[in-house]
Image 1 (cartoon, helix red, strand yellow):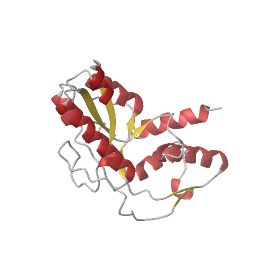
Image 2 (cartoon, helix red, strand yellow):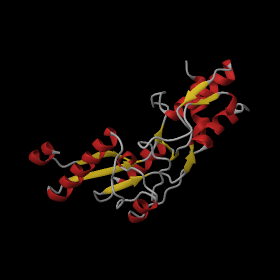
Image 3 (cartoon, rainbow, N blue to C red):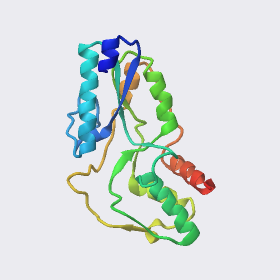
Length: 211
């Protein structure tokens, strides 16, 4: 941003912020929600968010903060929870293998990457601003696991081992976004096709065809 300012470069600067900037929130997350991150990742995202906003307001740069909620794709590392449970279901079906996870108590808005990118490209055509980008489709991890194992007509309880039946103080049980605000403000509508069960099935089919 310093270089853009000094060189007077006519461009847009996009910052990928995160729902990890927020801690234990009871209500839906919006742009007025206090940022109280619970981990270093969330803290770094908060710092970057504030810097990007500062450069927009003081230096008049065309900067955007995109507050992204969980975004899934085939390219995500398989250690992330959604790829992990999809692979767990495949391994259970093929080899009867069991998988251990920490807990299944959290709920999130699991977004499909292609759809997130589609709306990002639409939103960054608008005035530089802070934006919440999510689909508003909230599912518990337990539901997502069940979708994966139901695909193979398996009972997930026979193949998933859960380490803990509680959350630590650094874990947030539920995250929901006031996603409509950014879209209404910019006179856009959001229609998602891939979420919940469809997202899980799409991931499973991809992994099954992997070489």
